[in-house]
Image (cartoon, rainbow, N blue to C red):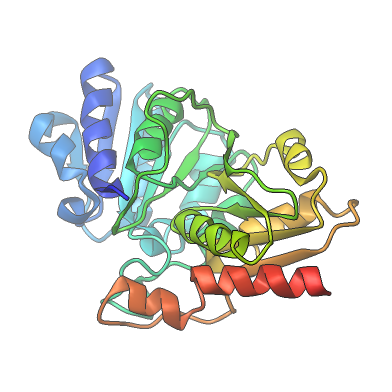
Length: 310
């Protein structure tokens, strides 16, 4: 599959939005060359605010800019974008429901070299629990661009989770996009896999392998974690014997929890493939880390087989 950088797509989209709307401003916490917000800074230096390693101040400043009519986009590593300024996000952005877009870059385990302090396996949980917050997790660079176009139209806060590594392009560039959309990428009749981020491509691989074993799986890209489209969710489980979720996040309070909550009244077995309540660690490369934490096509296959057997 063709692979593209989600970080580059974010930076390019930020520049595009800046050209279309002079209200757009960008704030960065000393990581602009990594998050790619530096692209915006090079194009619009007067609208680019380098805040240093002061994420709390960055969020408070973004809230102030939003109150003056600006459209702030702030970015840093996901672990620092959500955990360190949580109180400021809650009090200054979410409670007043301000149109601030937060980009959590190098999300999940994708910053494989820097270890547990830089890896965010709890960011979805932190952002999902906040009223008014929209939580997005793009599958590829194409969907990242579409999300950015949609995010600027939101009247409240948005969190976008960006992977550090190049990921396979699975989104049709010509397809329509709206926040809340679920994309059925493969149909099946036995089980449905709801996946997000890097785990979508892993789930497609798992479905292909299971097909050879006589198990037919539907694969759905859930790139909007919140708000979750309950109607689309119900439509995708019709006729299925089992549901499996797959995500690069702690098994608690992420996509799997959101799906289970929404289907709490439906009598259908649900299994989860996620980080098993552990912190991250450093590794030589991204795939080595995904293997170590059971975030693989094989893990999805095994979960499908076990839940159908049960």
